[in-house]
Length: 250
Image (cartoon, rainbow, N blue to C red; front, side):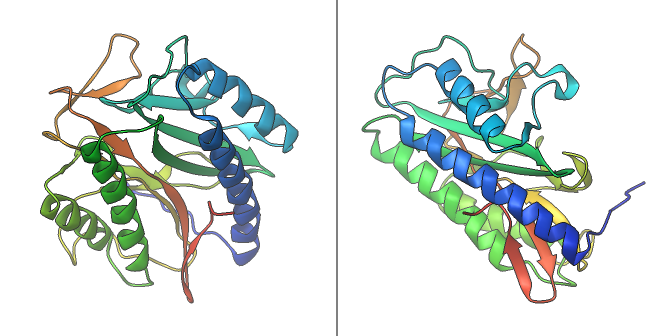
């Protein structure tokens, strides 16, 4: 049974502060991405920035996840564990970050290129980011969750890419993952109706190939089944009477 926890205006304001910290850290991580850096280098920097901001990493030890961020390279969709992998020119990397601040989580992600990347890789990144932006624009009280998924799916497929089906967005609050699930595909007018005070993480995961994925032996890293490139963007968004508020934004 779905149990959605609505947030008060005061709680949303705390979540906005949490989200601003997360956004600032994520942008700093993006700025240091370059050929030759390891994914563990990014994790070490993230841990310092999270600690310096007076916050806590949401991901570390969440279901025994071992790091503070997820670093997913090329065909890795999400949940890549930082390690000794050295980023190469032409790679793309998704960085996913969650923080806990004053009792509330925020969750955000982006994908960027490592040095100069291919035209196809850049288009994938651009389309994934645009899909998220389009989805946020249609959020309003009494809209349906299916409106979000439909908006993402129709745009992405029109651009020639596929939407991962087996992984979805989610509610965010005092818990990192709350109800409801937020699919990146669906039909308009279907699904749960959005209410004032809902806070959701919308996170399109988009592949250049088919939408099928599999999990590696580390039990975390999700890759595309056909080894095609994948990109991931995410924002934590509040539903308010004045429209959507992107909480994970500087």
